[in-house]
Image (cartoon, rainbow, N blue to C red; front, side, top):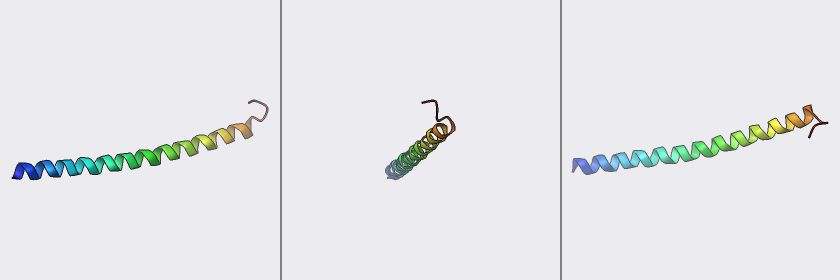
Length: 51
């Protein structure tokens, strides 16, 4: 019985970590995309003659 509780607990922890990781990666990707967009806009304003 205790082994079943242990397995359920570990699977619950793994599920929580997976959900947190997916959410964190989504936020990280959005932040990186925003940074890249700002960087491109900054480069285009800094070098208007070079495309």
